[in-house]
Image 1 (cartoon, rainbow, N blue to C red):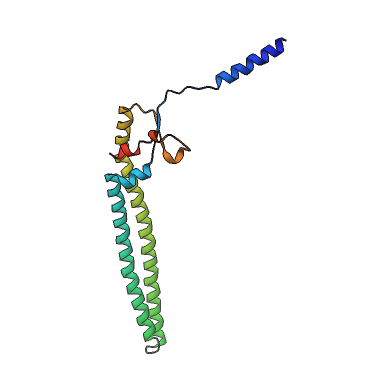
Image 2: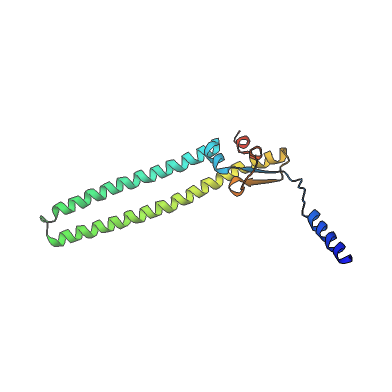
Length: 162
């Protein structure tokens, strides 16, 4: 009899101990939406896009010049000596290699500049979010990507953009 009573007591103890009452205020935010729709974020994305377009234009100009040079060399193939043709072909290959190196360097620099710009965006937006959290007594703020399901009134994205 004592054994059954003890088992029932343990069962109710574990049943009641699993109930938790949290007083923490937990909200979530869509940082991608803030980046795309806030003034600071739009400026950041525009600067990134402008840099990318500038790089693309520079590469297109060089590519057009290389294609023109290649076409010139092909048209001279039967007119000039084989030795001179090979020299021009080697020169073209060097220019193509320089183009590839430039392209790779531009991609690397663009990636670094993009990361730096986005980091700068977060540095600028962080005090705004912290201030909002402080004023509204928010204890925990999650990115919406990490929230499986939640009430829509817990999303503060729109208020942060304002």
